[in-house]
Length: 236
Image (cartoon, rainbow, N blue to C red; front, side, top):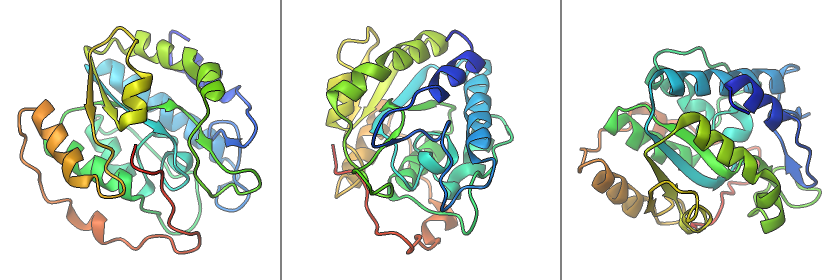
């Protein structure tokens, strides 16, 4: 797992119960026929761009939500911000893997508001790199278990070895706790969901020298997908 290609191959090979692996599985409701392949390609290009840019920071949250990285293949990134993600990483080609209107995720909106403000390439990831859901409810969110984390932990360590960051930004308490012994300095910020947006913004500004927060632009005005209930992970 020392190259983006081998890393994505290892990622897509994993199959866990009550978990959607977007790099392996196709959502029968929302995905294009080649959805998993598109997401694998998106992630490979993201990793390659991070290496070319000598990215020195990885932002790491807890796990994928069904509105964001599960659909795009890029962690902490929903479809409404996919073009912005491509631009931040040097204009790499990132494509949609789903059909229908672009879906907005509240967490991704806040994360990309701050990424636009600091205007520096970063690597985005999750402690658990897949979307854990309730049994028989694939469009729900749940926290991953310790056993699930242990199974996928080598992937996180391989990512850190591949990117060689000088620091990690842990988004939420669960992420900060999981990252306490990885051997890289960890800066913890509040998760932006469920009332944590202001604290998240303040935490990121402090890490990056009180960078001004730019207007989020029109992406905040996009309608949320109302086909599914608006569920996001609890603030962690």
